[in-house]
Length: 290
Length: 167
Figure 1 (spheres, chains in turn purple, yellow):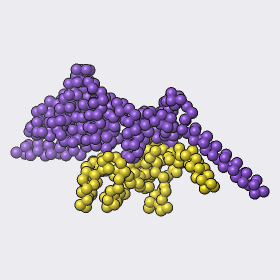
Figure 2: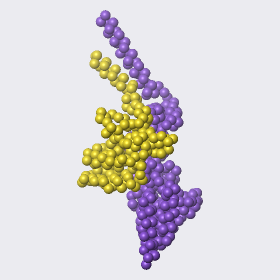
Figure 3: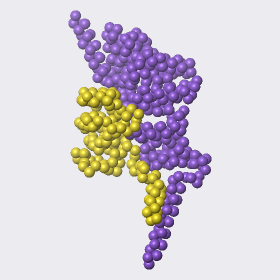
Figure 4: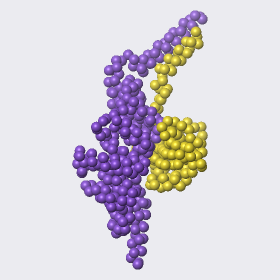
């Protein structure tokens, strides 16, 4: 009887070990060739892309993809995004770092983008942008369709290094002008140049930049608000008041600079426009009474 | 011998299941589960079945007034109490239920290198209490109906100063 018990127990143990080994082999995919693992990994990544990002199914598929091929940079990047959107910074960092380790050329500028717009880590973003440029010599890189020079300009503006910011916005403008023409330059570069000129008390120059920003397209309320500021500094209250009215109208139409998820750099608010308008109105009333 | 066998079995079982044990992904990334024994001041979900990310929906969830009001709220109240050696990010994650009430608070702390760290209790509690003090929240909305969602506010600290409020 005793030996039967021992026999059953041994059999049970052997079965346990065998089934766990089978599970283990399925999870490690050791039996697959490198090529097969890579293509399977890509398939899982593509499939995950068809499922709601951040959902349990999508995350499991992506984790499977990186198990199959730890160099699948796209899967690592995809894994990082739901954490980024959920404010889970450590987890985002771990996954995006893996993506960069696997393919720095593809993802380093994207980390710069995330660092800038999600964490306002401008110094860290500049480090990534510089590293990207080192990897791709004689070529202007684009992160999320934005030139790295434009992004550098934004970074320096965020760090209040206005000369450097101006320098990079101008590099960006010249580069785009030569490639696609004046009309297709991102007007935000002119908005930021206008704001920098205002910080440096160069009001006439600010007006030139801001007007250039709305030359081809009906611009945001921001252009008109900053134009109003420039006119106000120059003592032209009439023009300033006109610009605040346009700014207010556009702001109420939700036509103003906004961040994708968080506040944009130098974003304006309605109260700023109304405060400026009230000051200008009070001044004009004062003048009328004199 | 018996012990060695037991260790082998345990090891094999764990390694075979690690895929599920490490991160089982029971919910959408970001969902805050209620692991506490005590409820957050009677906070309750409207729908246990689904908690949406706050950025979903026809109307995203979040602070119901403008962002500058929120910035002013924190900037006016924040006081580092002399703790000037703190740099990094404090994220307060919480749920906004369908009635606009908030609860299930979680605090995440990372340094400037985005790795986990532990800041002074005073600072984290101070920021948490400020967040708890806000009463005006919009729930996430789909097709005219309000639902529960998870949301977060990240505070960037630089040498004890509150430099960015990311919400």
